[in-house]
Length: 262
Length: 240
Image (cartoon, rainbow over all chains, first blue to last red; front, side):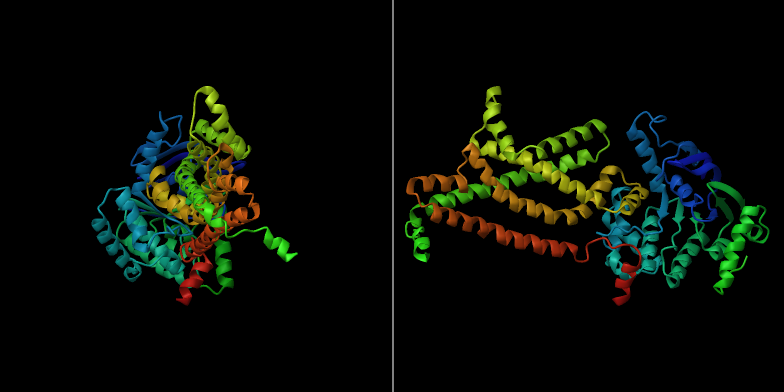
């Protein structure tokens, strides 16, 4: 469904993505793990064209998507192509990014109404269904600043789902949350995965990655170092860099008295 | 001493020229209204062009802003009233005053808008993009409504200072408050009385307007502002 082919991305001197090739199949739940600064989030943002790439190709449903002028005759063409992809791919951010001037229900309905052309009543009805699903029906008329981080993030998920996306991208969505609020967000994501949503999840939650994903990708220094099924990935990592990463996680967990072990 | 001071004023004679002064005040208010009505949208357009994608248009907008802000408003008024007629373009005093100060204020207001738009957090823009919104929809639905909250108080303050700046158009013979005062006092020589009354009239409009702007500012900041995602938001939620 989404396929990256030898994608390179630079931020000035920093070579953030080095020849990254990856493909995400329909219905697959893919977790991307790795140390911070490894390029996980950058890769995810490229999938949604929030970052432009320097070389390589990104395919959506096997159609290459170009975001640069060289390969599109007019800027408007590339804009429209990219907007069409984004409308089909939901994204949830680490910092929620709910629209601060809109109520919860308006946050969810604004894009369906103005991007997909839904009527207000249809959009509102669907938004209520989604709010119920994330357990926040009572908060429909609240404003983002009146919600806890976990609640905001669940609204953000509902907002993305309201576009009826074909895939969802999650960018460290629990990293900004207080620990006791992480569970409620992961629960919603687990439900989505069970329903067959195509998901790419950049995460530090190894428990979630292991239990929910179909496949795990480990990134370090802008490269995909290793990928595999969760059981194999955690039990028998092939690469030294992966083993090192897992060991450091394990040790930190043991120090904290955590229950998640490799 | 006090008697000499009081002798400068002749309040009893004020009734004769009060109507003229009030007409002058009405002209000042009309100027303020016309100029605001033009420069509020014009400033926004210039700000949007300056933030737009076309490099040529961006340069035009920047040049406009820098030229206007870098030259005195008086000079701009002179140009419109005294220089343009050499090219066959003539305006009556009121129109010349409105055009001159609208050009001047739109440049300043453009910078206010630009700052307001720049204050919208990047995350809001990314979220709008991620939902497939075009630049135009993003601007209309997300960016501008949030920028407005930031921008209303400074715009209000510019409105108040414009009311005072309309005195500049006396230079192109518009009979606004100050020019009327000059005309009146040059015939009855009651400088102290006339200009004290004029000062009081300016204050009578400016001070309540300033209070209104302050009230708006408070209202806009209550609950409406984007709170940082982390602990502040959670702290608010926890107390509710």
